[in-house]
Length: 88
Image (tube, rainbow, N blue to C red; front, side, top):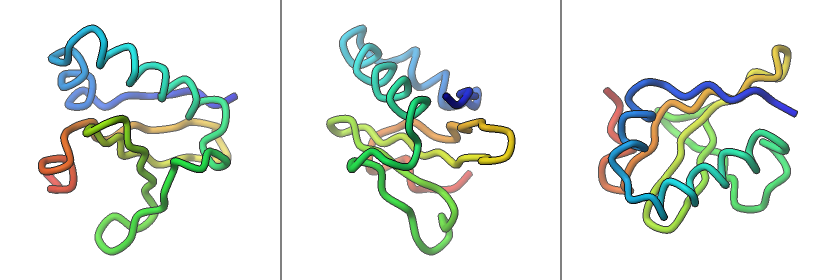
């Protein structure tokens, strides 16, 4: 099992969501912590985002990368499709 570290901007966005959306996101994060490579919903990203992975939860995207050596999943962004792909 991998540890999950959520960036403060992602945590802030998560707090703004409805309780139902929060439950769905937390369920996805739990699945990612168990298997960040084998889930069919997880896609590798390209271009500026090479090295990152993403998973969709309804209209929300979770952008993350994995440190295999330390067994940590870093959640960098959680947000709507239109906003999450803009690097800040």
